[in-house]
Length: 323
Ligand SMILES: [Zn+2]
Image 1 (cartoon, protein in one colour):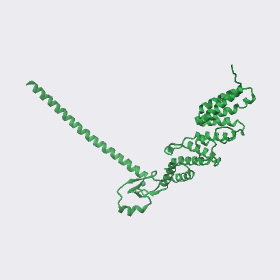
Image 2 (cartoon, rainbow, N blue to C red; image 1 turned 135 degrees about the vertical axis):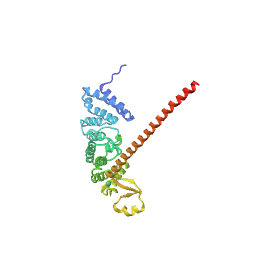
Image 3 (tube, helix red, strand yellow; image 1 turned 180 degrees about the vertical axis):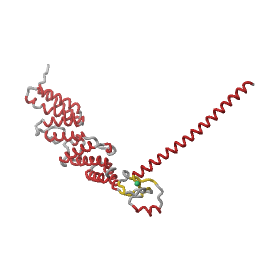
Image 4 (cartoon, helix red, strand yellow; image 1 turned 60 degrees about the vertical axis):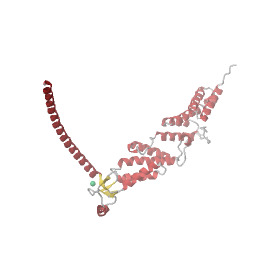
């Protein structure tokens, strides 16, 4: 017996397979069956089926976005979601069925979040102002969402409240900007790092300790041991150099400025340090060249003696051969 499935049966069949694959965690399979269901629905003359085309293409783009996790894929899914009736409840495999309107907003936010470069404190110095601006922009939008969490929090593994994600992004923007100006304007950098610290209450510990360390060092003002100029910013505008610091020196001069002597080392501003460094570099080069020149002269003298000895040896050989 030949059995023809009706269009409606085929549509339901594809939809069932799609949800069943989704429930088994086979997301690729789910996307495929949602697309098949969409093909049937979009071409159907049956208004009951045809009106479900939008819903099926939404599910296909939604699960495609969960697979790809790219800003483009999330924005495509958000666009399909916006076309649906905002009150339509959607089955995305979580207990509470969100409406299309609620989910569309989450997908737009997901697209923004996934468009941001990942923040890594060790790479932050290479990030430029355009990235700081993006963090700032998305951070402010997320703050506007308040303390709610994403409906998609489990699917995207983002469990923080949107405002705390937003605050963190504002903190990152300030770190990027502070890193750019800490040598030229340490006081302004201290301001930015202090703001960042306030925003980064829930940031990873390595980011917080980085900012803390910067604040500690940049806030320090001392005098240069060599030129006596006041100078702000440890490791930025001054460094500590090893020197022979005995108790006499420590007691007589240690109180001239705070942080002047630390662990037997003296504070030296970057100008004095680079001056000493460049001078010793030039001296070392000069003595190296003198030593090389003297060596070459010795080598030339030795070579001359070797040649003259070789001539004498071969002359002796010839004499011995004649005997
Ligand atoms: Zn100096």
